[in-house]
Image (cartoon, rainbow, N blue to C red):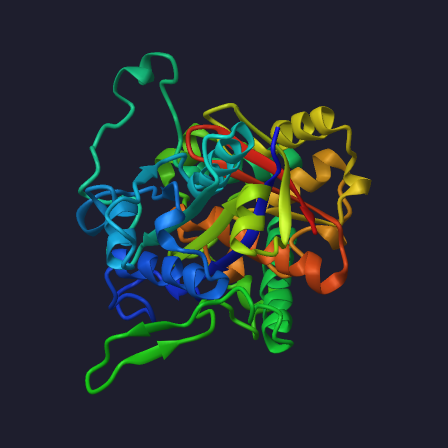
Length: 394
């Protein structure tokens, strides 16, 4: 198979996904167009050479409806001949976009592809009234009590024995590492400034709004459990009720994009690749625990690649909730210092459909800035699934 080369990968800053957040005043198609345009400007690629734009979006309703991949690329000024498709693999949607783009290049179907994602949770929170009120329908015959993702995070904390103090300590670490990286300029290469309309003049957003440098385990300890109710507590008496807004990822606005090409295209356009997609996998997992998929997905990835975690310099495991990466690390015996070394979604935000490529941007930059060779990325996904991949710095 041909190599799938990552030429560049960018993201917007993370905006608080609430009305009044830094990116809440911009249409999500414009948010997506911003990162698509940045890829073209930074790499010099002719946008007409792009074979496909594959975009992750978990809530494709209202402003994000009608195939936002196509809308975003047209807003970015791409030729009408460039197609776009919007996909939903829940929180792993834009990582799946990377998988599809890489597989297309590896198979010879694409020479140039863009994997991207967008989510504006300030306008379309999860869940949203525009979604079907009963999406599981007849699935309830097989799974009569599928829980909310927050309850799944509580189930994981109980199963792996994480107390509230450990969850809060991990969350504070995420903010501390992200704040330190930002202060050192470590995110500068991956972040694309976003111009947002203002009352008198546009406002340019250049840094993550979700990172709170002053966060401590002590400040997080004051927060109440986010998902406890009397009825749920009666149904799950084993739960410890340690999941709070402070050790969960926040509602976030953001977009991200990666340019993935074949070796022939890189040579033709004079592009220098930063990394290559080395190995990929995706699988399903228990829909009730829902967020444990990264564990078997990583095992399968390592088995098929012949690698061990000792061969990997950094692991990006999406921090949907603190219990998810903690369980992953405990189950696989991972080096905690290599886990989300620049902080994760608890600090950097989780703009759902955009998070997969956001993790890739952070991972590629970390490998370059530290001299690492390999990075592993994996994401838990609603309904019980997980994507996992290994990338190699070039």
